[in-house]
Length: 501
Image (cartoon, rainbow, N blue to C red; front, top):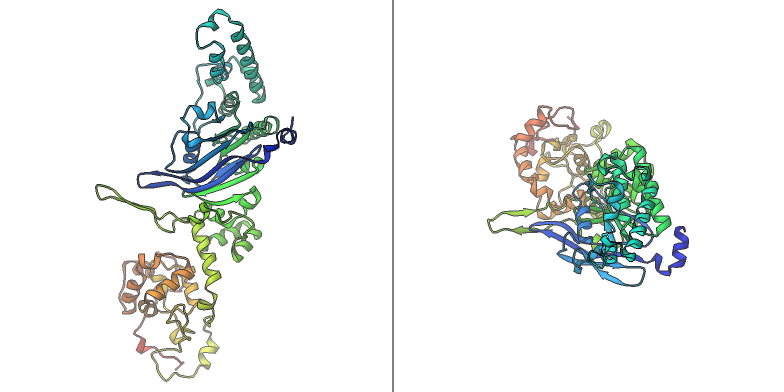
């Protein structure tokens, strides 16, 4: 029986077997999962992926009863129409009544028992019931003999599916690593689950073993109708067998869709590469993924990735919790790489009028020579004020810009962006008001970074010809800079001239 025939026999097959709604899990001051919502559809393989520490295993532990979530609802819908709220069930009733089985990151077999015995242990509930929870099985009670024979046949069936039936009488600890992984899945299937949760089943497998695992999982999906929810870091496994992929970062959902749309989602790429947003395009250019580069240039496609669910709107983790000893546990605001990408896309869409209306003219030798001497040698013509940064200039004074990379936090990419919007000199940054800082942060998608790194304070020192520890490192050539020589110190504004001598 294939997956389509199973769906025809069961009209509810296309419905969600698992619904996670507004799930949150907190450990003291640590928010491991924050307002997470997603669905796993019946008869499909749903992959839960994300960087290390994203909260994937915590989600599994909440679903399977090892943790009781701080908030939220986890609903499992069985094929017989019954519904269970997993967060309310006692731990042992989740596999028994809700028919949820799981494996763990680390193999947990009975290594001294044979393969067959490991699979019989998984059926102990059925055998105990057949014995009347007494010693009737020892006396060959007919009902127990029948149940025992059925259990052995089921165990042999799954040993054959896992391609290890020829070693049924060998100790489980003697199996190769990949075969032990398949045995663990076979043991879980002996419980007759409707939802099979696999925590990194391909971890540590070589390519041949990964192919055998893929074949087993596809066989489970196509012949039994069991829905599979898996955590996996091996993207070759995820992309080959998954019907639906959910991506987590810092306990938040950043993408949700089919494997192809998730693979090309810029938020997912930013989260996995772990680089600053301005570096993502460079990395993609090197690998030649033009489709993704185009998405980075134009903003995310609303048809791909998450909808406007509460999980997606939750944004970066910003909780700060006070403890009795005075300790404060804080997750840095804007730490999410995916969140940074969204902030930059939003800023680019909302700030064109205020920040990009008057592009800065790049100085050339001809334009510098043709420019007549200014009446006031101290200042070059300022651009009209807008709702953006107030003290922008059309061009650097005297045709030479200060080396803004001497300010800690302004790299070569951000210096270029600031120059494009009329910021060339230390004294401009030194004169920024709160509204200027907010406008610059909105454009650069920095979310508090300018104040945190004290750009204005550094700029005031550098504009007076003084140095900072970081500027000395730049001058010594220890930090990358776009200027020929690291040191391009600002001179007093009155000494600069607008034209050429």
